[in-house]
Image (cartoon, rainbow, N blue to C red; front, top):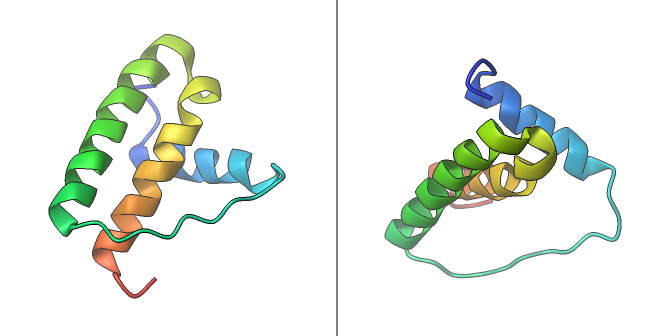
Length: 77
């Protein structure tokens, strides 16, 4: 999905996830370095998977990468 901007992919992934049930809550304590590396890996794998299969396959990875990114920019969340 190289023609779709990253912020739009994030919104698409969030929209797909929003309607799914049941829900789960993750609560963890990671170092910022671990969160950054995990986010980077998820984004890289999502990009590769997105190129092959589109948002239908990559949205869970994009969603988790976005959540990690948000936690890095606002650790109080």
